[in-house]
Image (tube, rainbow over all chains, first blue to last red; front, side):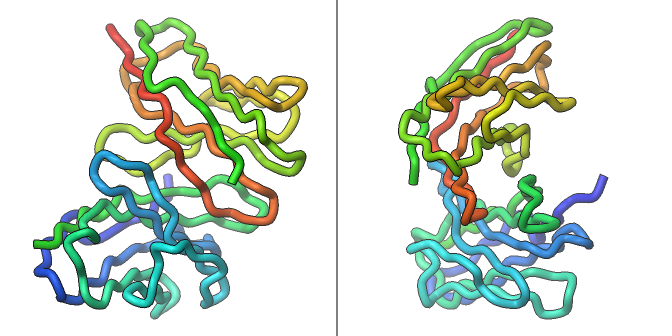
Length: 114
Length: 110
């Protein structure tokens, strides 16, 4: 069964450093998302991306965050200058079409900022 | 965003049916009702969705009240693998972001 793949599974970074989280969505999917889950808290929407541009973003997704689909297969989330409060599990998700309402999530990348 | 209310936790024995309730009294006519679940240490997983009519798929059934102010996810025969947090989510037709609540933690006992 096709799946969304995220790398790395765990990343440790120092506060203030830039970090890039990588995702390979399912190959024929066109809609891409990032969510995050701080330990013990709810899953939170960050951003949706379609046709090489952001279609919707949350208040969390400030200027420190950016997304990119650099090569037609990867979908990345960059945090420019990490803060301690960015420590969370980050989930990538993809959907085939706008009308297809089943989103497929990856296993997540655990980001630890020290 | 329209709000959903779910019990914090429920328990079931293996091979018994499980009915997970969700109240959404402020639902609007164009909100879809989605259910996702999150197994331990995994990303959310789609379970089922509906608008007005009851729905069945290989994983579960979704029963939607006539006034749409509540719904029930039905697992026909719980297995140990069904132990997860189950999220009832309302998705307006004009957005595809999912707003997760705290969900119901389902424990399944052998």
